[in-house]
Image 1 (cartoon, helix red, strand yellow):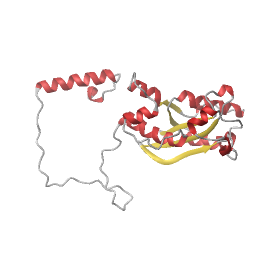
Image 2 (tube, one colour):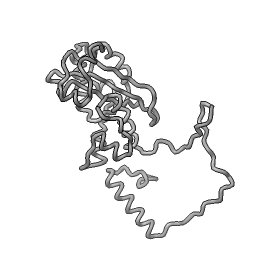
Image 3 (cartoon, one colour):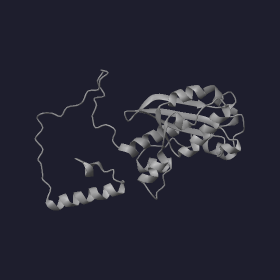
Image 4 (cartoon, rainbow, N blue to C red):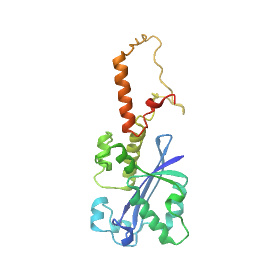
Length: 235
């Protein structure tokens, strides 16, 4: 299933008070790799941006004057995200705004979760790192992801960062294959280890080391709610 990382920027914090979406950013993840397939659009919200919100994302009313409205891009947006796993940080906020925009159209659009499965990366981060800060900046620091260009919030920039955070948080290393970047072929060439290399010596663990290893696996399994793969091999 396709994975789409999504973020929005808005005129304020609460759609029930008339606030609207002013930017939508989405990028695709396929086979645990970020692709060039993306959807990005600024929107004319037909209302003023609150000063507090403007200070966060830096988008101005003047900049949005000639931008399309949500109704103009909704079909393209739904087509892009349909039948995907939608990854959103603090999904309640963005989903609430998108569903509000869909309801305003009065065109029989269904709620967002009808078109795609929704994964809240904030809830996932809180489960993985209980009692710690789990906003995007904190997660970037935790997973050594460069967010130095993020002086202001922006939907497209934030999804690019969130995609990297999500991949690190759900699997770490994406690929173990070392690829030859110099090849001109469309197929990646795997570098081979020289056959003249000396054989590696194998050192068997002691009984004490084996017991310590098993205890560590039990601790990891408990901390991850039974998701330690090494602990359940062969089951």
